[in-house]
Length: 262
Ligand code: HEC
Ligand code: HEC
Image (cartoon, rainbow, N blue to C red; front, side, top):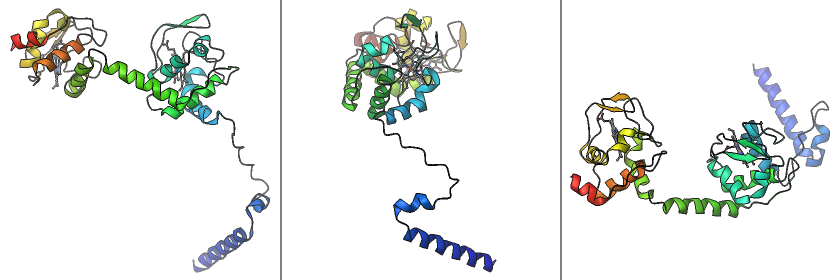
């Protein structure tokens, strides 16, 4: 054992001494001949964006940006992409699930929002796709991405249901889920004919709670919802949010409606 330690120590000193005497420019020469050369550094202006593309977008849009007909639209020579810089930024930060036409072909599938990407990464990946696959498109700056993000946030704040959404997120989403879907215990709010058919009942259930057996969309629910402590204004706001979200298009509740139900 001691012999081994001495040997290792000697090797360490040898290596240390060698390094000490070797200028950086000689390092390569002293490397064993059968080592493969280091991968070349990608100095192209789109290297960072290419990295993001390969990490995230490639699985759907493919290495050459041609997508998959009928499911994933192409980015290569995409008339849709190349027409509108702001829309391209929105596409990455919000994703989409609409019917779109790209190079004459219809697509109606879902691209998830890329909510983990920072502004500089969104700019980088778009600059890569705008200048790859034979595209010759826009240049996107970090500031462009920030301003699109700010405008989305402002539009949301100015939407009539913003206050209700904030209350919903804080007080209801833990049971009813962020998108109003049914759970094992909670009835659905999304598409609930039960909710949308009776304004007075919805107000009463909300402010007084409910623990009766109820049937919503053909399914029985026997859980209980505690009375929600909300001002008249907040109760109206949160009901207006749920009757106008998750695909619902329902009635509007006023503060006075809530007051009269108390
Ligand atoms: C999970 C698959 C998936 C991933 C990952 C994905 N996309 Fe998409 N992308 C789609 C689908 C599906 C559509 C069409 C959505 C629709 O119909 O609304 C689309 C549409 C687009 C469009 C507009 C249509 C076009 O072809 O010009 C752009 C631009 C785009 N994606 C860019 C990106 C970029 C950049 C990334 C990576 C940051 C990315 N996508 C990641 C699936 C994906
Ligand atoms: C602790 C979990 C919980 C919380 C928090 C909660 N609910 Fe409920 N909610 C339920 C359950 C369980 C029912 C079904 C009760 C029953 O069977 O009588 C229900 C029923 C309802 C109904 C009537 C049924 C339907 O699907 O239309 C509405 C409307 C409703 N909740 C809205 C809300 C709103 C708005 C909030 C937030 C202010 C909220 N709930 C908070 C659990 C909850």
